[in-house]
Image (tube, rainbow, N blue to C red; front, top):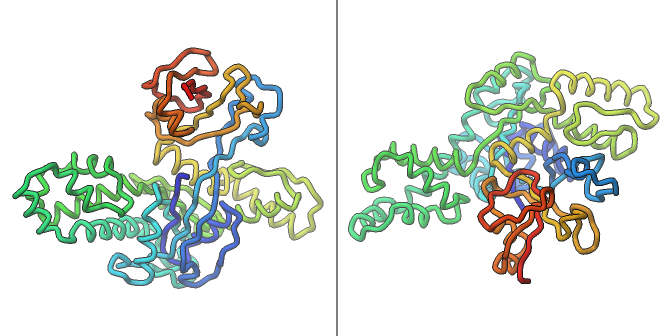
Length: 391
């Protein structure tokens, strides 16, 4: 399952975001290092289900009001403080937990109510813009530290024995959550052979590895209590994807929906009253409604969707066994939805369904057009595909 990390300084609202996205109970408190061990939970990305576009009148069974929610793993890691890569705070635990994350949602305290180490200082007394770059820096320095291990010895062996520099770097970064393609992509941007790299070159390479292996989106959390100027300045940052967020508002909506008080799907721009509310409930929900009108939503679902579909460039695919009825062998309509990288082929999808099907792949069929597709056909977002194999 695709994994997304939640990271940031202590007390920025990571655990609130995590609970809002997963409804998993976690410790939430107004002091640093509430989260000690990483919390793992299942959240979802939201996409339109193709059943309506395909003209399917029967119940899809897998969608809700025409929406499909596809599971992903969310990892809420321990708070990060400056110099975490040197072991300060809970830095080592943080970095270890983040290895498997394909992207990172950097949760910022947009209210400016906590200092660089997560200590409460009162609303508006800390500049959240100053927190933006430190997470990138800490992860880059962590990667540089791994690169530096035995570096001189590695380079002596490389110069003496030859070989491909990418393989040497791949071996060195094994287990750091950096893929071979990330290393080759970063290496292609370096102007020198690794054997001639300076300390600055190593630093640059580590920064490239960070950018490719741990792309980030910024969640400007606590927007409901943040001074308006803080949010505006965060949104104005160049080269950053910033989404205003209120994890607390999302939790309130999810719990109200669960109790039958409102109708709401994560990511909706509004909600409808569905039950009897007392005065306090009405006032609280109307305050959230005004916030959603101002920012478009609570921002939680938007962070997840944009991380998966923009930062990581995933697409959604729907394998079926009956291309005419869009069902599996049991008659379930559009039974599965797979997240795969853009550029994946029909044969890649066959292997994703099952290794035996991938190995015995013959061809695929586009369920919409009924056209036969070869193994190298590049899949498109929303494709409904039948795989034909000898198995």
